[in-house]
Image 1 (cartoon, rainbow, N blue to C red):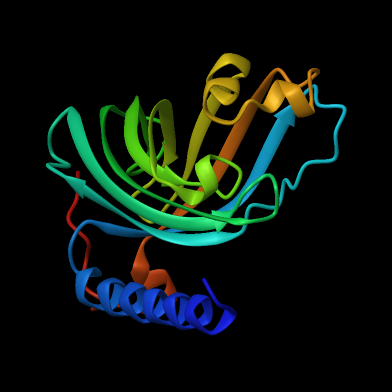
Image 2: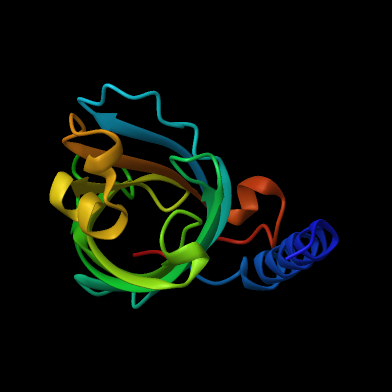
Length: 189
């Protein structure tokens, strides 16, 4: 794929992302800011600044079981762009006694992802544990990949036999904090 085509596709994707964010801000959508990966016990200098953007949609936030749909793109550990889309199911624990709207979600996320170092960007499936801690306005998404999970997808131990896992962090923001959508109250859980 040529440089012009890649640039066009990135700009097109950014335009679609911004349009969706503007339209969806009044619903239970969040803007996802990818930013940090921690390669546990690694002896290699991996890219741990996994900058990127995405969207996450929560369904049935009043329930104990919250379904999510998500899509994002980010710089991966090899410093190449990776893209993923998927969905998940998380058990929501409300901690209002500690702080207003505070919650912890624990569950799994299934996805399809592309990586340059895995089958030359051909999509591959995955299933990972996921946790979210925060409020309806700001939260932190955490995902952990064990060594065996990382190795089954990327054969990482061939390159770095010392790595024992990967912790991936994302910031989850109410789009209104970024100026998208109406200023009204977002649906409560």
